[in-house]
Amino acid sequence: MKKALIFLHKWLGIVLALFFLMWFVSGVVLYFVPFPSLTPIERLQALPPLQLPSGCCLTADEAARRAGLRFSEARLGMAGAEPVWRLRAHERQGAAPFHWRTIDARSGALQPPLSDAQAAAVAEAFSGGRAQHVERLERDQWTVPQGLDPYRPLVKVALAGEDGLELYVSPGAAEVLRDTRRAERFWNWLGAVPHWIYPTVLRQFPAAWHHVVVWLSLPAALLALSGVVLGLWQLFLNRSRWIPYRKFWLRWHHIAGLVAGIFTLTWICSGLLSMNPFGVFSTPGATADERARWAGAPAEARLDPAEALAQANRRGLAARELELLQVAGQPWYRLQTAEDQVLVRADVRDPSMPAQAIPALPEATIQASLAALRPEAGAPAVRRIDSYDDLYYAREAADPNTRHTRPLPVWRADWADGVAVFADPASARILLRSDASGRWQRVLYHGLHSLDFAPLLARPWLRHALVLGFSLLGIGLCVTSCVIAWRALVPSRRRQASAAAAAGALRPQQRSESAPAARPHCARKAR
Image 1: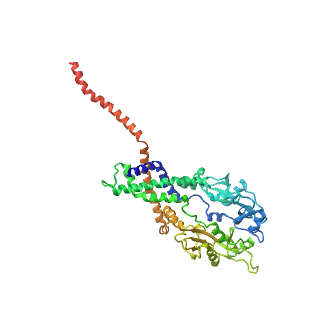
Image 2: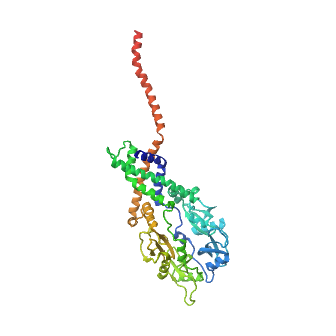
Image 3: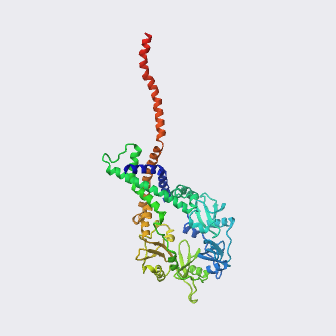
């Protein structure tokens, strides 16, 4: 049993030692330099303020009808000096997936995709810089995530400046989607790309990439597990001495494994679970039926967007974008800047009672919507939470973007079967859905891989120190593994070199040893 385990650990280590070293080193880089993205605050700050004269604009439904589209999402913004609706839509008779399209908000005319020159102008207006190079592409290293598929193809615009800023513009949506800078790209080649095994040539095929990562992580987890078992076996069951190895690298590999083996195993296993192998975890989003119940019966927005903007202006909000939402059969306009937002009811009610801008949905509306979300599971316990809890939390609570990605307060609904749903009254959206498997995922993946447990999140300096310290210990373990693997792969060459050196050293010695025996013979002959 022990010999088989040693054999397994040895040869898995020879194959995977460099992968482990790569994962640890790149993980440290990735922890401090995340994968490039355009944050909500960056996007909203760069947008021009909405300018909507009274009666200027069609509603989203009117614009979609004139353009012959149907849509699932709608946002109103500026394209230069003109207001446009950006719809995630497709033609009614078509079977193509949803893509973002742009419609003139005044006439309802469908806008053609931007040319390269127009995309460069959008990038220049967004950044305030000067375009130097323009390239149209389907995807590259920084735009491989599938979330960008509805925006493709893309136009990459390189801008003048020492930071090497590059912006990615969607010709269909006529907006900037992503930004990268030279330093960010450099560190990601050392961080996210190797850590996630993320080269474009592989990542552009999501299923193949998923299988490569899973089937590479499985033997890696077996290697880490066998190392922990062998290390403890030698430590507690060896009668002669705790550390039985006398050779330098083997000895220190055993010591480093005893120190770093456990969290190496947890990091490898939790990294495997990040891929949700074999569907062990449910998806964190609401189901299609739940989303439909949340939205309620379809209702058309009839309020003039200019009137909604006027209501926001009265509250001192110079909105950059208007978004159409629906909850409980009620359409709402959400107007926002990088710092604030308001909601305006978008269906026409009593003309004598003008629409009013409010910061969030009424409590009665959101409570009723949550209660009707899962009728088959019974009535939930619904409560408002003003701080993060065991399931809903933010890793960087002090980051201003957290207000957009993990806002507070939110409403939490808990059902008897263990399902919990979190809804944001400000954006009228379901933010998170978790069931029993989601709770395990919270601990086994998010907790063990990122150390984002509540006590550590409350003490960021301690979390940073632990992640960096454990990573350095893991790197030390991997260095010893690589040296041992190299020495295991070249023993015959070394033996041959040693034998040749020994033979070369032996010949002069043999000649010198044979000389005294010859002297008496020669002396006798001379006499």
